Image (cartoon, rainbow over all chains, first blue to last red):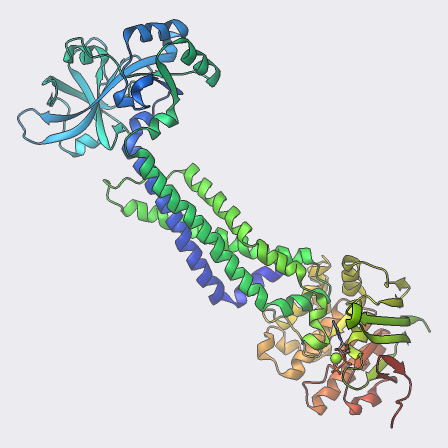
Length: 362
Length: 229
Ligand SMILES: Nc1ncnc2c1ncn2[C@@H]1O[C@H](COP(=O)(O)OP(=O)(O)OP(=O)(O)O)[C@@H](O)[C@H]1O
Ligand SMILES: [Mg+2]
């Protein structure tokens, strides 16, 4: 610490500049991570917020929720194998909704759930779904910004059914469209009793899930994460953003390691003197490490503050989500990466010989 | 009188195979408490190498080196580091101060390396700086000092860890003769005052009267009289 802090104080400009670069890179990391998270949630929060472990699909569905269709027999089998409270079936359909009397159409996804099941969304405003009541629906809060109000009558395009909006829910979207929830009974009535459900949400450990998959013919068991990935566009979006984040981490490691490598090269003579007067390699390596950590931590704090400030200024429609675990995760990864980046310099420091200080070398 | 430093038939060879150069060809020297020894000799004769070996910066190829009562000829890198920290003070040819430390911090670095208490160390540092006439410069960086001030700071630093012996390699090379002389005078005074010992390599004949003894290095051998006059 003695040397680390004094040196940074003396060569302020140098360290401020490199700190600035680190701030920019870590800001970009946090920002892109927030964006990825925001997009994920904007894309598929209906699935993300489901308190299920597995989703049971029809084997021919290619792991696509919207292509899957479960038969009554399969449902009965499933019910036989698990507790009623551990599973709940649901249906979904991409559709457009039109406010009665208005000409504007809104793309949305219709989710049919058991109002008493564990994936039924609680109401954030108004009422939640009830089992018996027919032709009632609750919609995602983002619809409110688009001019929908409780009590609106909404026409669903494919069936022509008119639904009454009784409440708003939080974080319910699918494939970047807001979700309307209806009860399974309404869903059946909308389709004259002909429409079956798409899938079953299941709470189970992997052992049990495997067992069920084996015993029920024609079903496939996928984890909630895989279900997310199978939503159209989800994997591609997240993949490209993740790629950017990974590259940013690599860049951060390189920038730091080149910077400290060059600085260490410049200081070979100095380190020689220090070793000559009795400093151990360990002490000098720690000095370099303190500087790396100090620089990284300060840059991280600045960029976290910056990111939160910027996120306040973003328009509400921009999908951006930054929470404590995400920031903490990025920070830890950033610290690790910077320590890895400093390894070459540490090796340099250890290699330097005290004899550099005397006679010839000076 | 007790020996501060003793070298017995010390040899140092550089390189290996055909490239071998024997730079020190059997050096024997005793330096007693309170003694200030000057080493003179032509360039390339092995003076710096001798100083490095005596100062535990280089291990000898053969021979015995005693600092105080301790035989250091067989110690490893880490132990040699400790020996240098505790028993030896170096003054290098170009002061070799740490550019980002103030004069006072140059001295405080040593107790820091020894994990010693700062309060006492600060007192010692201040009194050293006062004796060497540097107190008014204590918060200055090396770049703000004159050559003589830098060299005096280096001497103060060498004394800071209360070493048994000071090794100085041409400490006056970058100074004019007047400043150089006062720097050497200071070194001599400190040696007497603290009952320590010092070896100084120098090219400057005018400094020799300040030393108790002059030895001559010629082609890797030490002699008490120059072979050619
Ligand atoms: N690491 C080394 N490898 C090979 N040869 C070396 C090494 N160090 C020193 N030498 C050789 O040892 C000889 C003595 O070098 P040294 O630096 O001790 O001379 P010196 O007496 O201090 O000279 P000067 O007065 O010019 O400083 C030189 O010929 C030098 O080339
Ligand atoms: Mg020399």
